[in-house]
View 1 (cartoon, rainbow, N blue to C red):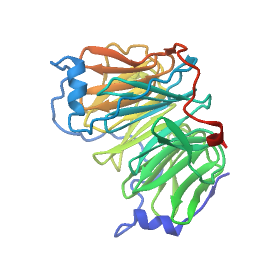
View 2 (view 1 turned 45 degrees about the vertical axis):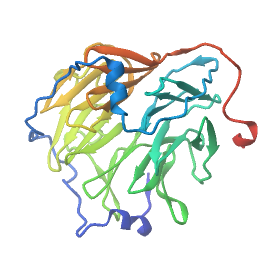
View 3 (view 1 turned 180 degrees about the vertical axis):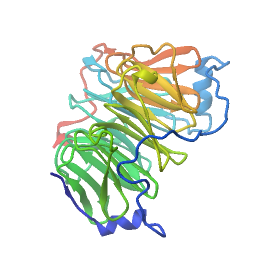
Length: 354
């Protein structure tokens, strides 16, 4: 069983006038109020190159990146983040960045499998067996004390949170402190004046600033056992689980499966950064808007490990097909899945790996 640890120091970060748990454990789906009555188009008139560059028109002009390529393939892209005009994606062989303005690709490959990447205090931090910060085209060790393989990185209220297969940690003025142990943390998101934590096999939790509360449905208490992705926006929690896609409005749960239009019940990624929510599965991508699901054309059968939206554009990290951008009906591969051997060099020296 899990050992849940209360940390008074972190409670300040989530303190509100009154702490309470939204919705009681055992809430059954009863439908959901609509989000907004808004018309969202799925076409872009401009050519995709101009659209993407316009997105970063105000970003500082970057230095042209150095092209670094190593043997292998960009498989199992597990996480992505954008800082200024640069996309960073982690995969089985390391980290790859793509600059939208210069169209330069940088591979920082050291053979280590990375599972998570986050933008934290204007730094890019990646994690696998260990944590690293990205400095130019190099990885520098980020000295923290955690146990287990890093599976999730989140920046919550200016604090770095590290989820591993052995627990949940938060960086404080006293160093790394452990919030939960004996849990395999896959996702963390802030919302409803507290913290939501998804795990691999141990369920879904809500932290109200004092203790963790396990959440479940009475009709199926194991339905949230495996949570792959959590997002929170517009007063709603979005859950991507092995049993489908869930929306929680604070009082009711809505559940979507393949019967409702999901390509696969195992939802791997959810992006809820805009009014239209994108849902990635191992067999395609759909959008969620006003309580309905719509297939995303040209991504039928795509194994979407991670989905990110950028305005009306979608960036997809795949298992085997690299990193793909879709703008309207135009689709472009940003990072090719196969990497030709160009020069045998790594952006990480031996003394930096210790």
